[in-house]
Amino acid sequence: MVMHKTYEFVCPMPAQIVSARIEALLSKEGVRYSAANLSVVSTRTPIAILGIQRRLYSRSNWVGVNPFTFVSGVEVKCEQDNSGLTRVTLRVNRFRAFLWTAFWIACSFLAAHNIPEPGGSILVIVVGCAAWLGIVSFLGGYLVKKEIVDHLKDQ
Image 1 (tube, one colour):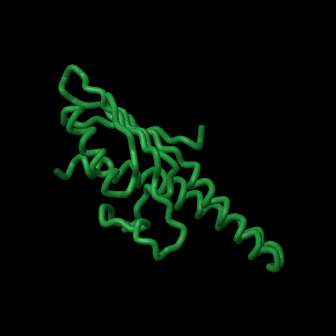
Image 2 (cartoon, one colour):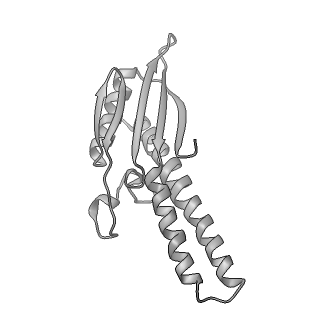
């Protein structure tokens, strides 16, 4: 399903350490979670509606935005294999990103209402594509994964 995006990657650390580092990252970014049996499931992600809210911003990535405010949930499962590597499966629920995209498309429809054709149609298409790529694909997918992978590499 498009609403959920799954990533898999391998980490050279033991599964217990990987799980603990992911828990630390989620705590730092304001995500509430439950952890058991080497899996971490978010129970609540931070919501930021206004641009002045502190939880919208982060110093953990080059964009300066907390990507967890754009997703509805995160599930991380760690599995230790025989070679000592840990296989990490990350599943991101992007429902909130879809809502933000729908909001921006609705706003573009309102703005395009008084623009003559084909300008109004072009505006809606451009805003829709930009919202999809920026919010759903980048913030709601790639940046969440990158922040987790970078946090596992750092320490």
